[in-house]
Length: 304
Ligand code: NCD
Image 1 (tube, rainbow, N blue to C red):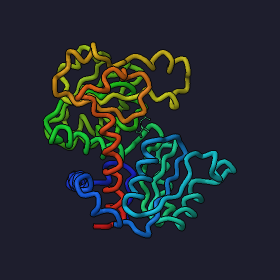
Image 2: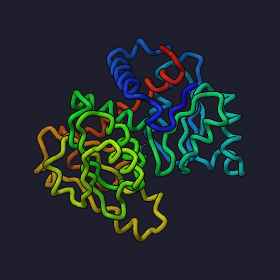
Image 3: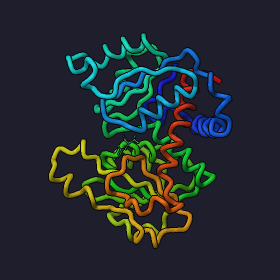
Image 4: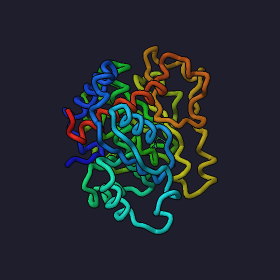
């Protein structure tokens, strides 16, 4: 039985295959309507979510399966003091596959150790978010037609932004990817990502605080929200939250074929005035999330 805890759980070939299946789903939706008939997806969300939970549920429903779950820890027995291990032991007897989001880093590993159905990590604290990365890769492939030879700017909260961590790990597998890591010094990417992935694989990267001075070099710009819920100090959050705001003026220097991504939700970091710019791909990205999650469910349930 396979789980999806971190993006490392899938080989590059498997990632490419998931992208191909997602594309086939996009063009042949009717072929997939009954693939998961009789199967149940449980969505256990101990942290807020809109896109991830609803796209997982929409994905399972579009495959002919059913869904159950909860959308906050408060509405589950966690509130009464139940351990994650116990919750998972029970829910895995009610469902065929579980997608979970949890504020604690590593919680999906505890879940996997206590489950007899596949566990999908839909975000664990400030750590990883592998299904977001898979949909990010699908989006890049759809928008740019390839996954290699890019200068990728990652901008915002690179410390707590779990989507960025998984994306760096995944993109560092493809040929000739260069990273421009744009963040305030308080929100730089964790050391382990540099040591275990960027340095180890000799990947070219620069760390900078300036979006303006670097935007002209980028093929892809991945904007992120400053992760309010991870700050221990409210004042520090307030000081850092609006450091980067992508607007029309900043975009003037950007390439004509820049691809602008954001996992969403957006707060202030992208001005709505650029939503109609053809380079703004973030709402298409959110839609692709559903198709990628259909492909992930099929893969983990071993359905062809
Ligand atoms: C992201 C997350 O939960 O990490 N949201 C998402 O799943 N699309 C990004 C965020 O919350 O900022």
